[in-house]
Picture 1: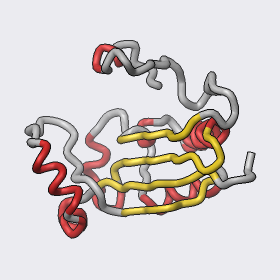
Picture 2: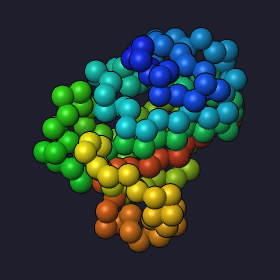
Picture 3: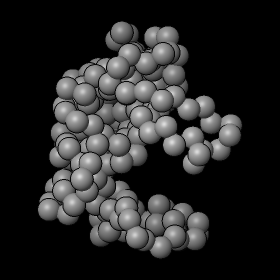
Length: 159
């Protein structure tokens, strides 16, 4: 899901694309999705009201026990550089993001304040072995991580 009509150019043909505002009602029936994954996305939403609507739609569409997995820049570790991007509107940390998720009916299963480094533009591509090694060596997350990772589940029995 994205508002950018050019996004499908970058997707594998097997991936379905939905061009729409994520804060509006999603065209999925209640309780039909297994997971919703976002990476470096929520900070681009124009307001906390839009974020809340997006979280509510995620919750509505997920099956009980379905997962919402979110990665995003952690304002606690980025400060001024966070705002070096014209389209960053929301300053979020793992604490504020988890609070928003809980307020929308999610249970936080895992929360890491530091996960991936924050390097979005003009960076080199790393071989898969470097990335997989980094992901296995969690102490490196505390050194290099500037983005949070939160895994939350739709609580069973909640709409």
